[in-house]
Length: 157
Image 1: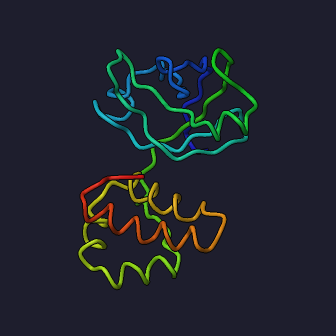
Image 2 (image 1 turned 120 degrees about the horizontal axis):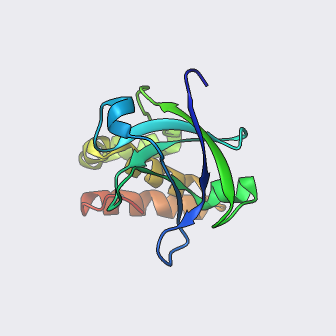
Image 3 (image 1 turned 90 degrees about the vertical axis):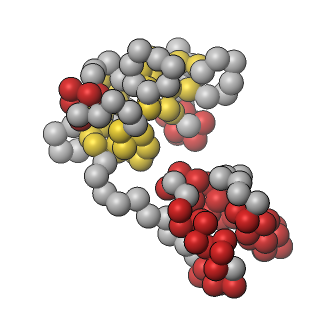
């Protein structure tokens, strides 16, 4: 990581949910010139990479979420210490769309245009949901369901 910011944080539980975060111990406004969300690329414990955001929730400082998947890869949980290296992510965030999903969008231009207006995270969640299907018929059903949900104005799965 070039010019990364590195710090050690304690993995904290978000309320009683199975959601975790670490506090960002610096001023995002001073470092990045931003008060709100800051898109970042992070590496946890020097081995697990993540693209996400520093977010300002109802907290004094910005926080960085740790997904269940990241915690599993690290073998860590709430209360554990983690080393975080991060840089601001200025790359365009694009979601790779498999050919079979692109076909469904070609047939539903209204849904495609609504999908394109969604945030990167919402688009990524929809595509991930379809790609996680284990059986071909589940994948087909999810593609249909995704189009219905987008047309209903739902932002994610």
